[in-house]
Image (cartoon, rainbow, N blue to C red):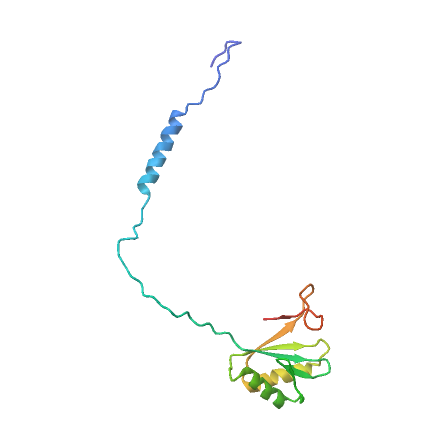
Amino acid sequence: MNFRPGSRDEPEINLIPFIDVLLVVLIFLVLSTTYSKFTELQVQLPVADAEQARTHPTEVLVSVSAEGRYAINGSVLDAGNVPALAQAMAEAAKGDEGSVVIINADAAATHQAVISVMDAARRTGLGQITFATQTTGAATGAKGKPMRAAP
């Protein structure tokens, strides 16, 4: 320490030890890096020309009006009983038991009308049923109502 008044020594940073440490770290990184070799084994992969087919389930859209009338895939049914619904749903599903039944029921439709659709789907062997609902701010459907299928 310098106790003499008036003389000030400026602090000096010595960069040589800092550079030495950085060089040691750089050498360590270079030596510890592994280089993978992709050309060690020559393999010729087989070629396939066909694209794998995707299967999408058939959708059966069942609409239930407030009056209890039914429409399957846009076709209005004359009879509203369960056997007629089951027959129309089987024709719409085209024998595919993996089809998905989407029920678009009016908010004022009776519970019995919706249960009849579910019973007809059970009789037909269609076990995947979903309901279409509306959300606020969604795109509007056919009658100005926003619609979306609920999972």
